[in-house]
Length: 236
Image 1: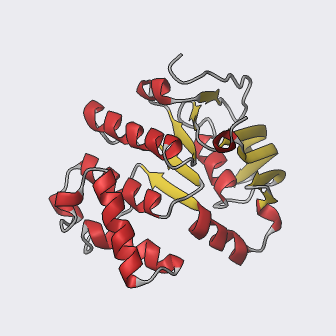
Image 2: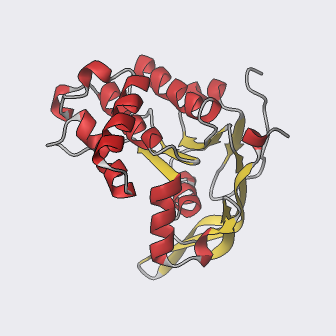
């Protein structure tokens, strides 16, 4: 096994329940999961299947009721809340379908903001932000604000913001659902580059079948369960 394909994230027996009135609904029902550095792991399933809940449990955003998550070799949910927050800041990148951009900030400021929060100096944050925006093809647009950009460009800012942190774990939740086919292809190619060139473990949840061709591994989830966990080599 090569270093960049070593285990980055694993989970066993994840259970998550939500109360709705007097009833309790189980969204995750004992899910096992794993992801490796340098690979794109695609979690696919219909709406309501538990995809977003799974990614929240794996990334430290939502504590499961049962089960364990090992992230970079350590028990994620065994840490204090403050240490989980710091882990996400230092090691995780996030890309969501809603972009989550600040309306008043230009593209460069969107990226430098998170780097400054990581503790980088102003100069280092600026340099790394410019590099990330160049990588996603937005160098000439870095002074534009969100209302001046297309949906595809907004998502590329979100990707630049995520990869500028040089994360070891990159989570993408329906990153192409608001985009047309061409922009969706650009976004998923950038996610694949993050795995191949930056050796991140990329975990992408989607119901978009167009993305299957870009995955190293496809996991199907339905009704809170993963009945099969097939592994397919890239290009197969």
